[in-house]
Length: 161
Length: 103
Image (cartoon, rainbow over all chains, first blue to last red; front, side, top):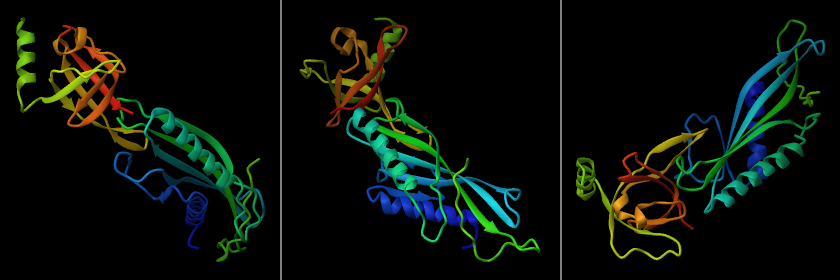
């Protein structure tokens, strides 16, 4: 494992891909999703910030990762597109809220705000919708007395209180 | 006709600008005469996605009662679209229609 950020991104993307096989899961995507031409539904995972806190526990760094999951759907009718966004978001919540990563002493990731948007007719002829869901996860790693991070993570994911 | 109406008719008659279409309104009986419409297909960003939309300019004179209204339908190149919104120009010579996929 090269870094906390990479570990969190890879774990979340793998979890979503395994639990929601009908969706295409991506990470590290810079271009907007073309809802007319790309395979949908589609989930894009991005990690926006990584905040360290060394005051919680001596000898350990508690990192809080802020994750953004964007879902994109399209359907034949407006109602179906709206419902598809709801269903995909529900699947994301089910996948992450019931997650205990192996080898970790874990509490579930914390769900944040989710914004839904049905594309306006002037924006898309095909009924399409998207949502942006915010999540936070905490990862704890050990720091040696010399200040160096230990080569092996002590993974201890907590729910923020 | 005013000069504006004449100019509009000229633009809609130009095969380089307009395409033929068929229009209908509930109870959805297709008009027997084709009309000429000017199509635009902007691609816009929506949040973190992009999608294409279809908008057309139609002469008011080509429409039933010179009015376009939501839930009317228009067929262009074998594809039927539903009118989602219709905006009339200040001179009441044409309508700008935003189209959605017809089901």
